Each structure stands twice: as C-alpha cells, then as structure tokens.
Length: 275
Image (tube, rainbow, N blue to C red):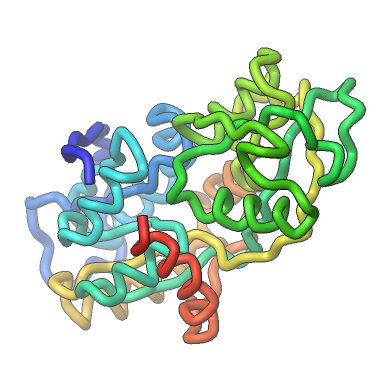
C-alpha cells in the first residue's frame, strides 16, 4: 500500500445537542470517506450528514479522505477511522477487521459509461478501439465494468485502451475535455459533479447492479452508541439535514448491508487480494 497521506477538512458546526449518545466528548470522531470524488466535492456532498451526526454524538466529527483509493483502504484496514463510508467490497474487508456495518445506501450501484453528448457510441461493442477513463484498479465499478466488457468480447489493452483517472469525477471530466472517448462513473457519482460538466455528457448504462456505499463504525465506538447511530441514520431522511443530503446524493435513504451483499462482494475481495 502507498504511504498514508490524509486530506482533512473540519466541518464542525457548533450545533445544539439533539439526543446525544452515551457520553459527550470533546475528542472528534474520525469519519473516513472513500475518495471517489475531489475533496471539495466530497465536503460539499457530506456537509449535511456531518452536521446532523455532530448533533447526535454531541462532539465534533473530523472529515477525512485520502489522496487515493490505495491509501484509503490501507487506513481503513488499519482501523484508523471511527466512522466510515466505503464501497461495499472495502466494507466486506473492513468487517473482518473490527468494523460493523450500519447501513448501505438504498439505491443499487450501477456503473455508467459517460460519453460526450454528440458521441455516436451506444453499446458495449462500440468501445472497440476506444479510450475509456476509469478510476483506481481497486474501484468496484472498474472491476465490474471490465468484466462486463469482457463478456462483450472486449479485452482491456487489446480491444480498448484503459486510461487511469484519479477519481470517478475526473474520468467524466476527461471525457468532456476530449482526452478519452468515455469515462466511468455511477448515477449517484454523476449527480455530484458540476452541472456544466454533467450537461455535456450522456450515460450508457451497463445494467450491472451492485450494493451501494456502506456506512460502518469501528467496534471501539461501543455497542450502545452503534445502536443509536443506526437509529439516527434511519431517521435522517425525515430531517432537514437529510432532505439536503439526499438532494445532493440521490440514493433514497438507507437499507441493511446483508449477508447476501457481503457474499456477493467476495469475488471482488478475492481479486483485490491477488493484486
């Protein structure tokens, strides 16, 4: 794993207490967000959630992301975060390392290949001889989309050129700028990029349906507080912060991350373990 360098952004709001957890403390909870987008975009998207949880826990929450997927996974598996929002294959790995799943987002995670609005590309087989920008090789949607293209008789490096992008948002930006023919993202990821970029692309659906990002807590947070956090997240959609948050992130609330979901992630976990 690469050296762990973290980008920190404090989002402490000094809000009034509301149903505090078992103990109010001054020590911040470290909330690690998967770096699927730029730091500024992640802060903007998650600000309402952080503000809400700060009210619940009656203590500041330190918003943390990482410079790349590798550094994030390394920190996650080392237990460096108290709260986590992670892709489901990372979540499955973390659950073997003292983390417990609270919920996943309710919508399914569907990889999308974005192309410029005037592009003639329509189907998987149209990508023969094309350049496709995708984020880190550990990204779940990249692993799944490469398999989808293989099922359509397209092999990376032979039938199309795979171009590395630092984030899913950067993959879309590279498409808009004409550096590549397509960029890989998701429906919820597309909603979080600037509107001027979003208006210049259209999405080709892969039809792949995966579990969504998972919110987890480290066991050191304590069973009582973990139970209260679960209740707080389930109540979030009905709050003002929740309405704001789910406008920024169109995922329709929360649902359990089930045993079946964990089992479905095992092939992707196995792929990561081979890297």
